[in-house]
Every structure is written in structure tokens, then in C-alpha cells.
Image (tube, protein in one colour):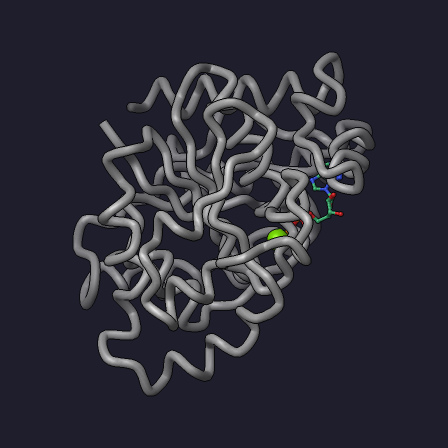
Amino acid sequence: MSKIIAIANQKGGVGKTTTSVNLGAGLATLGKKVLLVDIDPQGNTTSGVGINKADVENCIYNVLIDDIVPQEAVVETKIEGLNIIPATIQLAGAEIELVSTISRELRLKKALNSLKQQYDYILIDCPPSLGILTINSLTAADSVIIPIQCEYYALEGLSQLLNTIRLVQKNLNPHLSIEGVLLTMLDARTNLGIQVIEEVKKYFQEKVYRTIIPRNVRLSEAPSHGQSIITYDPRSKGAEVYTELAKEVVSYE
Ligand code: ADP
Ligand code: MG
């Protein structure tokens, strides 16, 4: 069994990258073979697992644009079972360069096809836009995890994302499904958080993960040490909830 999951929401700062790194680490810790695919030109997932971008030889840009053998862009991380195809700032040009490329929406799908058998999970960290890189991710994926930040206007902009998912289902990838909706950065001290949870559950119903990610300072510190929360502070609340999320994701296999 092998599953490709895109982690997508065109809003920035909702926890896509934090979820990619820490769900990836959580799944690897459960003994799964995991490949992270960083397709955000900011490359935060790449640095988040301790890869120095200056040392990256081949990145996702070379896979998408230069047609290199995808395996040549795969790098091991310090966590056993967790590999990554990194992103560097080179990727910033890809949106424009892909416009004139044949089957431009299918580039990532083709690349991942040759790697899929080696992994239990491939997690794609999407950029904060609904451009061609996110379309590539949704086309390559079996399913999508949508992180939603517990804040005012949490559902704002989601209709655009859902519309894009429908368009991809109709034109490019009929079997794409919603894997789950993840509530992130909950501040349990406020009523607002509770209201947002209810609102999101009313909208997405059983698609909402039981695991809710609270605000946790350790989660925001870990990336500057190039570590997942599970290695940075295994006893933290953040490590606990992302491990729980990994178990929940596995339970839906
Ligand atoms: P995105 O990839 O959607 O832009 P990030 O995962 O980069 O979002 O998160 C945005 C910021 O919020 C980052 O600085 C990150 O460290 C921080 N952050 C994410 N999740 C949490 C959390 N549960 N608690 C505290 N800080 C968080
Ligand atoms: Mg990000």
C-alpha cells in the first residue's frame, strides 16, 4: 500500500509545512517509509528537516523542469525512514517556465510514479497559492490534507480551494479525495477556538481529524534547529499530537 497525500491550503501560515515535517516524522517513527516532497519555493520543509539548501545538488525544480531521474533528487534525513526531495529558491521560476511545457500539470505525477513503490507515504508540502505547482501536487496525489488555522475567518478562501480540487477531479485526477481536515494552532484558552472547531465540523463533518493541533511554542522552535518536533522535543505537547495524528492517518489506511 502506498499513498500520495498533498498538504494544501492557499492561505499562508496555516500549518502546512509544520504538518508535512511532523506528520512525516511521526509516520516514519511508526515504522513507515516516508518521502517528503517540498514543492514550495520557500523550501521551509527542506530546512525544517535539517537540509542545508546550499548543499542541495538536485531539487524538485530539476525533476519538474530538467527531467532528471527523480531518484537522483532524493536525500535522506537524519530520521530513519524519512527521505525528502528538497526545494530551493530555483523553484520560484518554475511557475512561469512550466507554462510552456508539454503536459505541464502532469510533471510531478510522472516523477512520483517511479518512486511510489518504495514508500508507504509520500507527503507533498504545497506552496501558498493555487498555481501550477499546487495543481501538479493535486494531480499527483491520491488525497489531500487541508490544514485550517483556528482563527477568525478560518473558512474564508476554502471555497476556492475546494473548487480547484473539483476542477482537478474533473479534468486531471478523477480519484482525488479529501484525506482529512486538520485544525491547527488552537488556543484552548479562548472561546473563539471552540467556535471555529464547531463551524469547521459543521462544514466538513467526519472529514475533520479527531486530533487537533494546539499552539505549542516548541513546534515553532523546532524548524530553526532543523528538526522535527519528535526529535527536537519528544516530550512536548507538539510531539504528542503529531504522533497521535500519524496514528490517526494510519488508521484510515
Ligand atoms: P504554512 O506552511 O501553511 O505557511 P507553517 O507550518 O510554516 O505554515 O506555520 C506558520 C508559522 O506558524 C511557522 O512559524 C510555524 O513554526 C508556526 N506554527 C505552525 N504550527 C504551530 C503550532 N501548532 N503552534 C505554534 N506555532 C506553530
Ligand atoms: Mg509552508
